[in-house]
Length: 429
Ligand SMILES: [Mg+2]
Image (cartoon, rainbow, N blue to C red; front, side, top):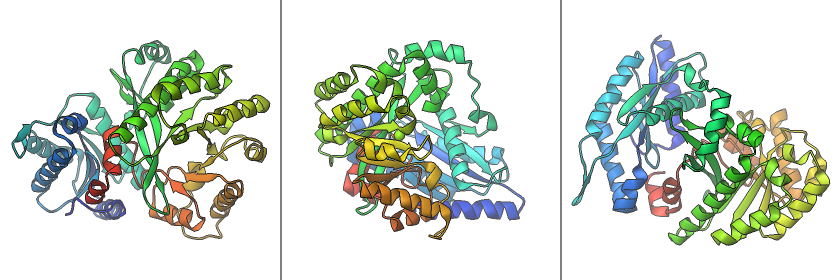
């Protein structure tokens, strides 16, 4: 058992556990443990003591597991554990023993505090036997646990994927989400494939709904666009992401870029360039570190006007990226006519790159997109990279950067700070 396993080794062990459970006609369980409000402890104690607190947590989990299970410190304040357990009840018993061990005070030097954790559990084999699917299920269960009582575990159930929400209620509630401070940003690291360093993040908005827990943008962005709330929400996202970037730099961390998703509705505003300039000035962020991600679908309505607006935005010093490239009404003329700096290779092209065969159509198409972007002086960022095989293919086609679960899920600002501090990221890689 080792808490410092590289992620791909952990995935191999998870795969072994899934297949061995299948052979035994039994089950295996994946536990995802997250420390609640760990950023507050970091803030109070400082990052070095916070890291030592994580080591105490890891040691206690290891003691409970007793040396038989695979245990992995995934990122920041999150741990993953693979158990060979016959059913959910047995896995929950282990989760409760871990919680009991972590309820004891954490002592580092003369400092002492209590933490609470949330644990999500997903069992396999299930109807699908996909590793990434299992990881997501454990995370969904963990988020559900987090939205409830601290120090509890939650077993994944299929209904968690289909939160029953009355759209009308959600519409009304979304109006209050911003003033009530229910929106938050998570940041998914972007990694340079040559230096293997984190060189940027994509800011992703979440709604911490009082009853439903953390909602992904898919649950509310369409409503925000329909109601026009996307305008204040989009401005809040850009402002918050810029301020966060400034805060990382003020903390002495390596400068990185921040990518922010930009809605078609924002692009349609007649004064959008002034609004963006206002935010850049107000936050004092270096414009060249800001990327606005624009989806292909946003460009269809009025290409001529888009061109003018995009040129003006670029003149402010920000970078523009074409998001989800290749999934909409792909018109290659966009690439030659519009001033994009970055192309985001959509998950639809990355997902099939499971095998190393460079003659496979999926490889050929993705490679051609990368070459085309490079010929137009654009940087290519591959999205949703989840496996070593996909990464190997992307390296072979000379893709520049990647983001995805293979490196990290979207995380809070403290975890990004941790990744940018070299000593610590080496220790917990
Ligand atoms: Mg995006």
